[in-house]
Image 1 (tube, rainbow, N blue to C red):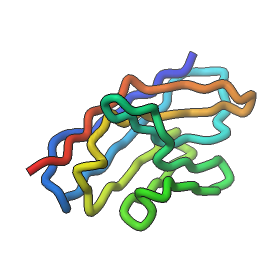
Image 2 (cartoon, rainbow, N blue to C red; image 1 turned 180 degrees about the vertical axis):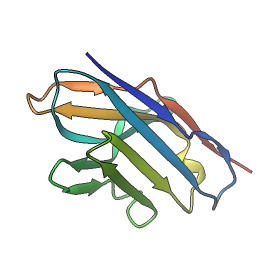
Image 3 (cartoon, rainbow, N blue to C red; image 1 turned 30 degrees about the horizontal axis):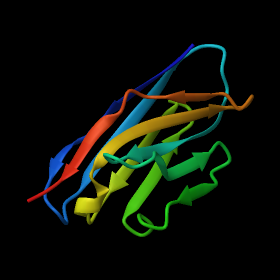
Image 4 (cartoon, one colour; image 1 turned 90 degrees about the horizontal axis):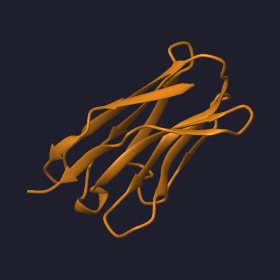
Length: 116
């Protein structure tokens, strides 16, 4: 079983920064990719950023240039540095892990609120 534990959400003013972190634990799995998704009220969950075990990175167009994803393969952690935050970035952010057999795991979610 895989567990994902997120940290780092909170309230920030527009233009501010936050850093989200996620640590994977458990046994019997190998990681294909990790990343972050988000869901705002009344909207479907959307991909924010992903990074594969080989280092391939994808960003949503709405966050490109503002957010940076990074990963520590040895520690099975993934982080998301979020800069120049906007009100429309407000959402619950979920850590995601896809194993090499393409099984998906999700964290419990962490709230990010951008407001003055």
